[in-house]
Image 1: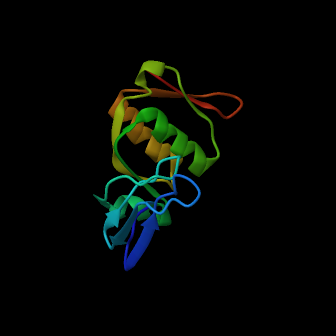
Image 2: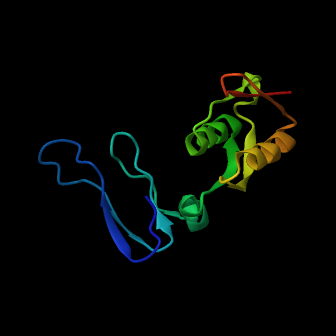
Image 3: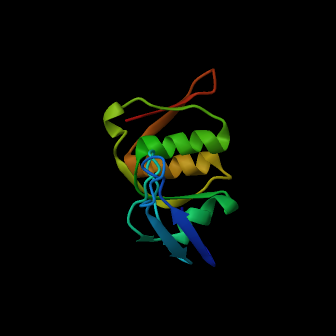
Length: 130
């Protein structure tokens, strides 16, 4: 959770019925906190609002994000299947701000950064390989 302006009170999930020790933090503009699957809060952290709000301009901002995760994000924006033929590259870090309006341009940049080539299959799947 990240706050662009104002303040937001965020509370931990209680550890059981009647638990009054649930953690809480008040976030101010430019701050964030992560919530794990069990509902517990992480430490307060500075928020990168450019990255958080990029989706509003159909942009995606990645900072050393695993290539596999970047490709899954592309699939969401473009309703396309992108397959990585080299599984060992799934964890390769990608950094950059990508305009998600143009799938081909975004793929070109990613392919150049990771030294990949694309093959488009008959079913529309895009396979990236060395």
